[in-house]
Length: 81
Image (tube, rainbow, N blue to C red; front, side):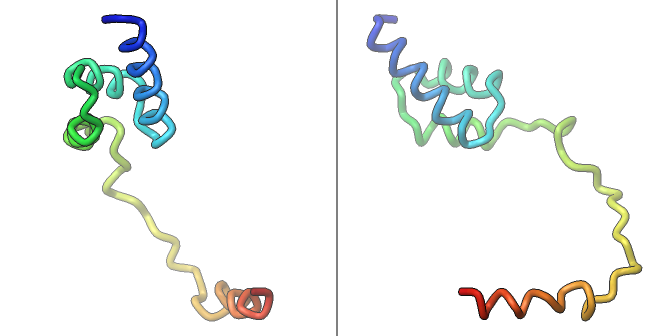
């Protein structure tokens, strides 16, 4: 790769990492699509299956919340806008 290609590669990696993708996946996708097609890079990133990083499916919700009292202060924000 030429130095301009290295610069474009670094910029693409930085841009996708700022979107929240992990560096190891970003570099893999960028290298796989060396032509720099960002749409294809994004599609590749979205297609990577990382089940070890998925949130647990057995999330326990707190049933003790009182919907009225816990969210009653939200209405006051409308007056501040």
